[in-house]
Amino acid sequence: MNKTVISVSQFQLLVILYTVGTTILIIPAGLAAEAKQDAWLAAAAGVAVGLPVVWLHSLVGRRLQGRDFHSYCGDVLGRWAGAAVTAFLVLFFFLSSATLLSYVGNFLTTQILVETPIEFIHLLFGAIVVMAMRLGLETIARTAEIFFPWFVGLFGALVLLLLPQVELDHVRPVFETEVKVLLRAGLTLAATSAMPLISFFLVFSSVQRPERIRGAMVSANLAGGLFIIIISFVSIAVLGADLTERLMYPSYALAKKVSVGKFIQRVEIIIAALWFISIFFKLTLYFHGCLVSLAKLAKLDSYRPLTLPMGMLLVIYGQVVYPNVHYMLEWDKKVWVPMMIVLGIFLPLGLLAVDLLRSRRKGAG
Image (tube, rainbow, N blue to C red; front, side):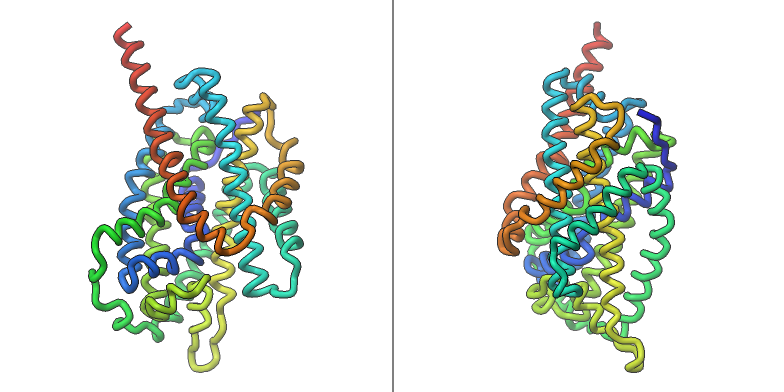
């Protein structure tokens, strides 16, 4: 395979946008359901819980030493165990890609393009992701450099336009929620914004200066977490905890509240644009992990021959991965969080422990 190289700053932008991902649109509702008016504190707790996890992930990046992640797994765990990890990651990344594609279709068909067939939306968005993968990781990273200033500008404009609607009584009393509830809600956020950063295990070998991965990854995840904390606070302060909890997409409803002199109104497309930007990069990096892992398993020199057939399967599976909204909510709550604890914490922890043990044995030998 040709060596792909991205700069540290490009890597950071990808981590920020990946961290925000789907959370900017849907997470305030889940946090409000658990922590009520302290949802923004739960978001802060989630960021705090996620930072050690991200630091753990960065340690894996430091241990690669020029190898790709799957070669590292093979060296540490052995040929067959390493191949088993690779096969499981293929399934995980493909499933995660399909769930995000389903999110896109459900949101657009219920909020904006209500008369458009969801199949067409999945096909269009899936084609964009396939095109991005055909162009490669370097192009995706450069695209992040183009879109990130727009992301920050639109987010800042939305928050400023909502300031007149803020009611601080909505966030009082502060710290009424028990600490264990805040941590439980924070764990759910960390399972969405920090633990899925295992996708970057497949990106580490492409970073230009791998010795800077640790600081770059932790700081970028923290920056992405600040976006989540801010949108959670503004959602509660403007809509109130009860309404935020009941809405499927509270951030989208939040943007409908903008009214400046009865001239600037109904700017909800801003939050939609923010979400499309962040979810595009998260979905693309999930799909990148799937293709790279599958190519490694099949011993192919490049993942590009797999982009079209796997893209077609992605569009098809995106139609059926969530039969209904209730199933989606139950999956996210009962399956996703435990699965991410295993993959996001125990997998890297196990790899590092075995790697350290083998290194000590070699040193002793």
